[in-house]
Image 1 (spheres, rainbow, N blue to C red):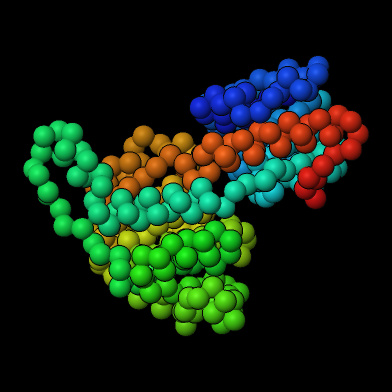
Image 2 (image 1 turned 120 degrees about the vertical axis):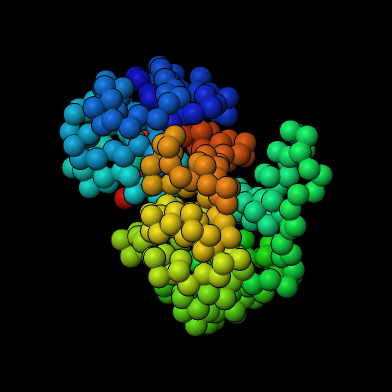
Length: 316
């Protein structure tokens, strides 16, 4: 039985789980991203099982139709908008998920916030290259306003850290109530636009859906203060990124910390790679040892359970 693990960029799938427990299964790891659907089909042809990273490689109806041997898809996490679940059901393909920890993306959010506020990249580069000693003046977080868009599990965790930094926390999401905001110890913003205009830092933590796609539009970005920072560790599709690029190029906001992009890997010539007021990372929010251990250990468990005729963690 052939099992293909896609988007294993660091070639670590084999290190974080015991694949030898799957008798008769030949695991193949693919280290590079497959952007061309024809190449996805070529690589997966003959595979019975495929393990995918959340929302990296789409498994569309058109692709699935060309993979008659595929019987099981395992995705990291319990949501993956890139998998056509209806097409999987029609073709008798089981789809299973794994646990995904909330702390890694929340921690990375603060790496970006602190990196921007204290100009960590610039100062570290200056130290390495023998440049000026102290070339920037950092921003204070204590007493500043932190705007959280999306107060789910990750957003709430991020908000607690903001409170530990003695920041005033505003929150907004399409269905956030006064009661839920109060339970988290934060203030409910009167509107999304009010949050954007009042915050020193805006951090995005919504799930991408048809309702939330493009929720941060050109007007929202225009409402931000010139000295404010925008941070996105959620999904690029939540944001009008053309409007964000224009605002950064024109200095209408102080900067952005970004870990997610419309196209990944990010093209070499994209402005987010070169703008001096952007701190960009290659989608590292989920990339930690504990998370990978959960992903791949539970992927092996999912495959073993499916082989035994008792699939577990099935996504419907």
